[in-house]
Length: 254
Image 1 (cartoon, one colour):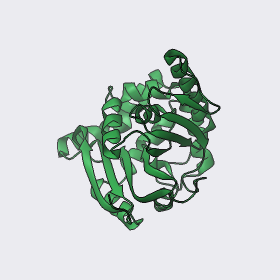
Image 2 (image 1 turned 90 degrees about the vertical axis):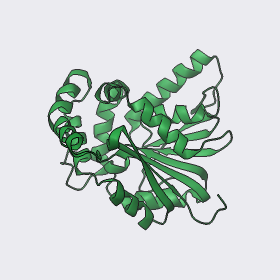
Image 3 (image 1 turned 60 degrees about the vertical axis):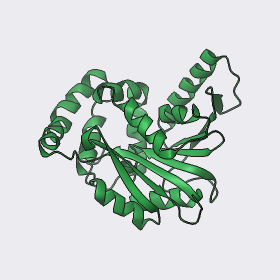
């Protein structure tokens, strides 16, 4: 894997996520001290979900967030370019369906609300028609794409006028002492913890570096705005360790 400051090659990034897929959810829960659930809840609120809305979840991984969105009644397409992640997502959806005693069509699953469908796709060239979705979102995946502006433009393209974007991503802690301690954790403690719980601990060295190299809240907001989105804002979570950026595609009434 190339270092985070170099060009991200999609095949290498996909291969890395294939390697970490098996224990991805467990590792995230441990490394975030369980805060990942809080971050998913905040993202769902930013999307203002409602029954019947069409949602695209890019870099969906094991579809953990997608299932939470569907629980609000939305119909969700969980899209990822890692086939290993999608395989884990399929297993988890099948388990959820079995527990709920609900039937599911090919590639989808009942979740007690809306449905989740799985799709293989790259954020740099999404396999969906213009204006296909009411809501689009990407959680902890935007920093891993080779061309952030292209991905944001693709998300804009597949969103209907007036539709909403929510980007949940690691950011910059707003309090300097916390920011210093956090950066130390990323480069020292995170890889050590990952070695104990991850199926591919070396991948988390890259992930730690990608977090450290990622721009802060205001810079990301400007990048989103430059891609054509309007009404861009953000909400800091966990003191700014994570931020949820929200924006709207122009041309609608909402």
